[in-house]
Image 1 (cartoon, helix red, strand yellow):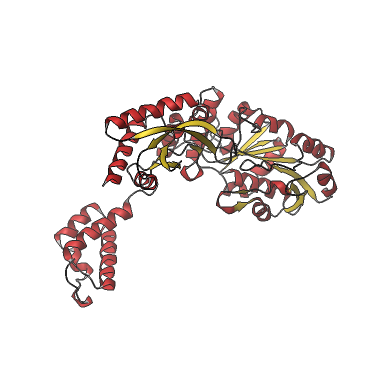
Image 2 (spheres, one colour):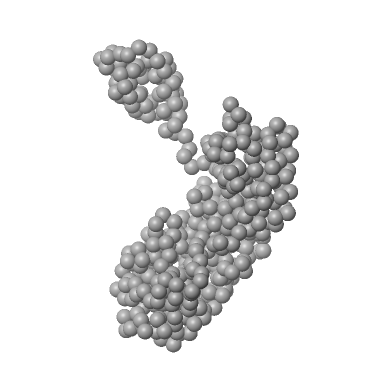
Length: 445
């Protein structure tokens, strides 16, 4: 930097914009954007009392590059958390991603019946596939599972009471709580039982003429153990039918196939009148909320004014349609493949990376540990895996990887920076090894 200047010595924005260096910048960026960057740089120099022509041009160019650089970037997930909410949960299959791209790039029959030429419904594009895949009487798709719960409570219970166990008043990511959803819907929440023990009689005693529904919320992201008692979905179903009340089951993760102790969509549909779950969790599709159940209830939800505010766009429709079709045809989507990977398969893959890194002078080893399903699925149930554990300062390595290109998200295990092969997608191996080598080199400086 040059010596301090008085503020009056700083050139004007217009003067700088006509200088060759800034004219060149205007070939790559709009005039107004360059002017804003110059203006901010001059303000910074004026405030600090430090000015310099040589550094100014570089600072303006860097500011423009930062403003226009993508903020949403593809990252390599080496954490071992399959449904990582901060990383977008389920990665789409190649076919689903390509379908979303095609939908985005052109027009589609989003709300048009091609045979008749009449206006159609968005739900109709997906409803047949969902019914075929799950045997549900009717289906509706909204933009996430919280939206599905909100719509169900608003359309079916506004101004009336909904009974739920205190042990099921869950909080999901971002401090979003079930009582908040209930309050926003206009329904009155009636809590029964205690945090750890709720009996069928608690529900029976709470039912009045103002009761609109019974609600079961699957505690998919935590477990209550020890001195506990809970009412099964089968018991709730019998009570709901005896009292002529709808039973709403907020299933959360939405397992189509049996996996550990997760309740399946089919089991829930057999007992509940409405079943709600996320599309971007165990289903392996895009972010959305799927509503299945009795036709008259689903129809009432779809015709409520709130349904329009919560509808999905054409890219989500295309990606979900492809995901559902692949599941119907028995073709595994990435989430299924990652969850099904065996410990031995993962050890071999991590060992392959270790050999590649050794050839480049980077030290590493193998460490046995657990992966996690994530996304509120299978809490406290680890998936055995083998980690690639890098030699060197763990925190510095993790930071260097996160700031790399592309960013790599690692985990710290046993005070070592580790990569879990379970969540590294096929085709990312060579790029990952390059990133690991670059991070190791940075930490050695």
